[in-house]
Image (tube, rainbow over all chains, first blue to last red; front, side, top):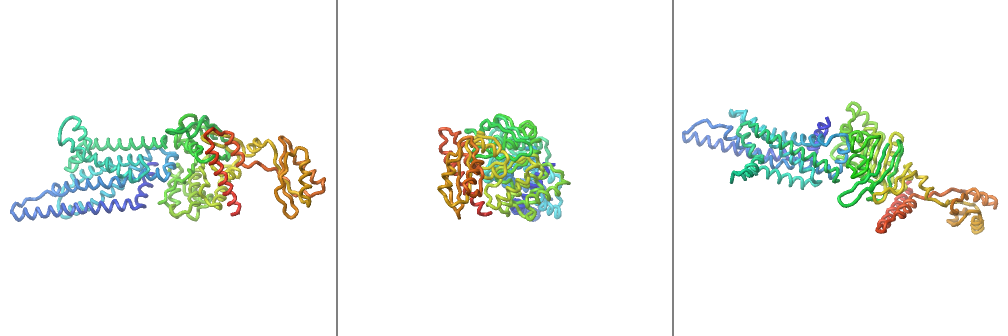
Length: 254
Length: 341
């Protein structure tokens, strides 16, 4: 109940400020560009195929959906810190954190409420890109199952980066610092799998395993792998756990 | 209602609150008085469960702040120095949010919001964005937030700071109106405020309690000798003065001013002597008219300076200077207030 109250307040405040509109507009713009680009490329290739006589039905999922999901995933990486940076930093700066922490609610309810609000905004963002997919369904016959799995992957990876961003936001009362730090950590987590491309020692494999992008690969192919779901869910729990510990430390450090 | 024992709060390098103890009875209004940085806010933050003490205990309504923080939080309304407001919310939305996280039944909430809006006189700004409100209104919304869940204990951190004289008077009246239903602790560095609002005063300086007493007791405890203001209607100024000086127990007579034949004197007694009856008789027997005679209480300014000065440590001279400044500021403030009346 308290979690819902906090979540509701937080979500409303996203839409009272320009944050929600900015993030959604940027997403629609950049996502739209990638979609247009992917679609044009697909159309060109199938025309070429038809002209050279190698006419075969091209797979929309393989040619459009999969690259689109990967591209859109990178865009989300940039937008997520913008969503999370204010969550706690602003409350700390304005002193409203004192209201929350002297009210009869648990820290975990505050953390969960705020994170859920961020996830909700992120989901609304994803819904905008569903419009693009709707166009594909109008003019082609893509398979919806890998698409759904892809979106689940986007949501899980987003939830994981949002949890980490929420944690970073508790560490400072400066939103810019929270945003920059959140972005740096998200980006690092994104590209960690590059490490394992140059070697396969245990440490390199472990570091590579921590990459959020590596686990997204199977989702974008439409493969639902429990190993990846476990990874994302445990990262989300870790992020939220760190957030609540950090919030607790506000008490004795403040 | 509130019990603090041996409370110490230590930050990384310095001690903010050093082994303080005090008790507050149910229904009392207690003033927490001290210069900036004395440890008032820290003590309040411990009481509201915002931060744990380094050592010692504090309890509210029998619940320990560390063992039972949820029970304590339910019984406390807290107004921090900067009211915890969300500028992008409307007043009524804000109160609704606060009511929910304070655990007020959602069915009762609209009624409760109406009640506190009326009590705090914010009815006319209910639909306004908090960010657009004046400082006085923000303070009142902050107060409304604190009393929304009808808490047993109200903790107000400098509730009148930064307000204009008119708003200060309104806020003080509001706080006085809340007494009785609530036990109130308020902190301030404005001395007349304590005299006006509080029944009991806890003076704190450099993290230590310097004095705890009722306002009257504190005054009389510090007052070995009595100071009396007297107004006599007579023509002969030096005659009156020398007659007053002859009264038994009088140590000093100071002539203040004369206006239209009314002579003002301040008379100080020797220690432990009650001189008012004999002063009155002396004036009447000499055939003059006694217009006014009243005992002058030592103002809190004087008490405060005396207490903190006797508490002085070698390195405290700078603080004493700062204190003086604060006091002068207060006098100026009080003057401004007087004018506005």
